[in-house]
Image (cartoon, rainbow, N blue to C red):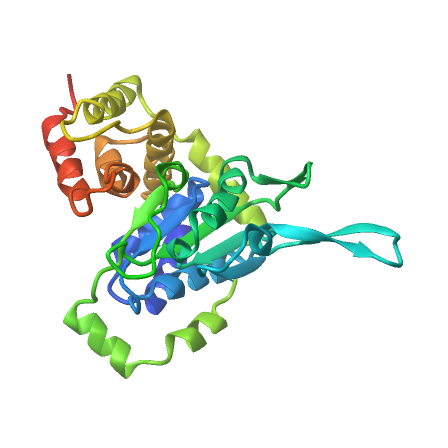
Length: 303
């Protein structure tokens, strides 16, 4: 399994240069059956990474460009009267795909953003009184621009909490940027990617994540992190139970990627910033990273 995962990560690293840690975290999130939020300024490779992840998994894919005039029906679908059928016929929206790229999600209104809530949590949507299941597996990979940029709406806490991880790409180092400038067009390279994690193998890897062991002592450490986050000054609330469950799943996925069947404290500490930062921001941009560093520094691994 480790060899396969390493091969997939290597292929993704040929597309997104100099971002091995972010690529590994993205793979970790998907193996943990979580949704990903990728935040950065325009032009940093957010959509490129999203396209490459979808392509390499070989799953059905839809891209939704979120704009301020996008309506919930544009995402979920709508019913229209069909003369031949003599009844209303449902036309599914782009949400009915295994991988959905919600591009620039925070450019849409809160009403449209909320159309994703049930889909992300329940893997189903309720439309016109009928519940419709979504394809399996189902992943939302959303990109967003920093809230400081014009024309953006902040994601509500209920939406943020449904994203297992938030990743930031940052500028490439000089060597990677030079290779990018001299190299082939990334879109052409992405289009050539072959599916390396077909649905059956992806399901096998995801099932293997749940078999990774987390000791009682390690779960005690996770609980201390959660409890300490709820006591931090300046926060209305700390990390939710959903965040704790996601942290354990992500740590198990990271351990599996490292070729282990048990979780170490290092696994928790590696994935913790991407799990916690977007949940601890709470309207104060830039402070969550320091809060996460403080939590990791003050909470002891062993009690």
